[in-house]
Length: 358
Length: 243
Image (cartoon, rainbow over all chains, first blue to last red; front, side):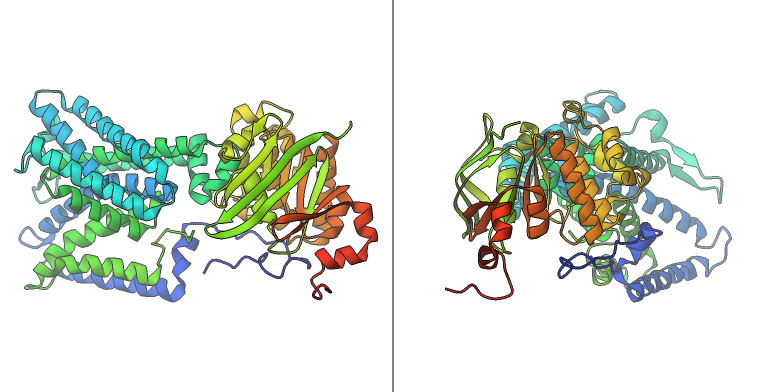
């Protein structure tokens, strides 16, 4: 539990002792927020899952005929999926943490970014330029939505949810109209479209998926530097902690909101380009990635970048491993394992692993 | 310097949803120090929030600060107009270090007057030693210093302080009072909302007493200290007021 505030009720007249600084106000302290028992139960669940997977992997030995080569590929798939989840969800968590807006159109911006890049690359535009244009277009559409509709409804959760759902339905139909209902895949540029040898078991792996993992790490690092090291980042953190007080210190909070919405939407679009290259672009992917992003943000804790990274990894690994390593006959139930993950996190720490009660 | 009107509040109404908290409050705040006293639930904090433009509450009426009309302005404009806010309970940002609390303030604001990050650290040397500590890990007194310091960095002409002595040890309260005297000597006006009669009268000559969302009485520190009946009637909590 977070230490209770010693200066609350009843402290008015008397001498409230000055609080001592905690020696490690760190990730560990926040992770243990669910109480020691909760942490132990969580770690036990993780250990059970991990040992089951390890048993499956190692039961036929380490050789070429065993399960290890397959395991390596699945692990890399999980990592690249985690990269996609992180890109999509980091924008969502930024917007939610700051504005308390659950942007239900986030998945549509993801898909829109992907389709813009697909249209440009099929028209012969350079892939890197297409990435930039697609990312910015998703950002601009998100910014327009925020300025036109959400700015007037701050703090009105239900209205904002309905507005963003409406926008997502309209965008979904428009994209169906312009880009059709068949699945499309963006072709990565030459050097990234090949496969790369892993150097073990004679395995090769698509270079682009490795690139997605690297891109997610780089984007995460840049976001972290932006939020931790710049004055704008300080203002964003202050706004997440206490918006009205930030405003009372002279910060034009609506402008900060607009900037954050733009950046968050850009991240959705970037995720869409990568997703459209690794997986596919099709109607329904918007809802699918919205759901995954929301799950990631719930697991990691709303508004926490580190939590989003951990949530993306957890969700991707649980999805990837449960499809393969559930006992035979139970594979169709792999979805259930995802829900068990969410339920377990919420039961042990309702604010998410790195979340804090507001 | 002769006192002049710094804040003209006319018929200020404030609502939280359907709850009507300020009932047409009218007051003229002069430069220098003014204290607002009153029991819990009389609308003191609501008054601060309404003056600062923080919603809720929803407000109606008029508050003039020099040429500027504050009602309907967002908090950042009110801050830029020259009003600093030290809220009840300090409201420091839990994700920011001491130094970041000061560095996040707009350069334009910290350059328009005498208060800079360096001069705030000069005023509160204890904060300089703990500049890389998270704001919420500071002691209660240091937290109050930081809340005052970041408000000073916006270089206000008027500082609204909501219960600055709340929850602090008597020696620390003494230091807060000293700080307020320094600020007054620097020419900053104070609107001090207090429950602590001693702090209020030590700093302010002019006292406004609030009762159920209105100014019930305007008096002076001297007159209030001399009149125990008034103290009991408006501020005492030990027994119900006699009819």
